Amino acid sequence: MEYRLLGGSGLSVPALGFGTATFGGGNEFFKAWGATQAEEARQLINLCLDAGLNLFDTANSYSNGMAEEILAEALNGISRYDYILSTKGTFRMGPGVNDFGSGRYHLTKALDDSLRRLKTDHIDIYHMHGFDASTPVEETLSTLDNFVKQGKVRYIACSNFSGWHLMKSLSVSERYGWSRYVAHQAYYSLINREFEWELMPLGVDQKVGTIVWSPLASGRLSGKINRNNPAPSTDSRYSQGGGQGPDVSDEFLFNIVDVLQEIAGETGKSIPQVSLNWLLQKPTVSSLIVGARNEKQLKENLGAVGWNLTPEQVARLDQVSEVTPVYPYWHQRNFPH
Image (cartoon, rainbow, N blue to C red):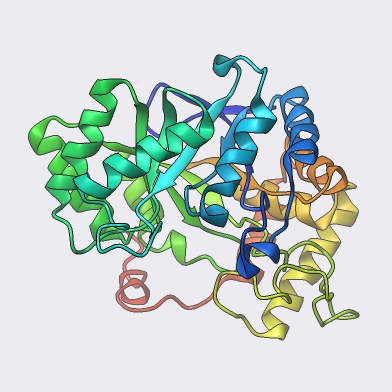
């Protein structure tokens, strides 16, 4: 396994992390992702650890806490310092008026609940799952800084932020000497490259690492969809309503898959492995969160590391997946100097 520093921090993380949104299947949305229970989860986690993958990513909102509980059961008996634990807060966890958000009241309860479900005394990477526009940034960051000082959290991160959300947060942390976001967990794939327009340059400038979620675009880059098989299979996450990310035209997707198939033939790798390896060549990318419903899928994903696409192969994938960016990015590209 390859390891990379997480942004400007001193924490080394594996190039591939394991996502647990498939654990539990607590509602219809997450059932489309999977319904892995503790025994199977333990087998997958042992396979990860054997391969050197020691970053496990979850969230309190995954199946309303079930994913955290199943992850804890699966990790039972493994030394706490043999793995890196990542979870998230912010999203709604109950019907009450304060059962969501990034305010001090909700985050304090959300973190304590996650610690209880995960059966641990600290979280290694604690993410704000989304930006809370109703809470002052100062309140959120002072709360997170207190978590770090209390020893409940090692590093703080964000997820699904806009560029100005992240930049303002970094500025506030710098102003008061508080802990700063070391990573941004973001959606990024060959078929949706908007992350590159602002968030990637920001990450380069501010040394914020990227943890990529849904790097295979909800299975659309799994190799199952191509010109000869244009319709998603009935057992795919996307076809069952569990997919995320904007739709793209069939022709755009097929053009990308055509090139992926060519490069897969050249490298002796699979289409998912090529798709993942392309992401690992990109600036700021520290880790890709891969999920798996079974050992076969996990083993295939693990084959994405230990080798590199050539610059020419990366350029071919860049070209076929390029789209005209929205304003002001298309205008800024008129001045490449």
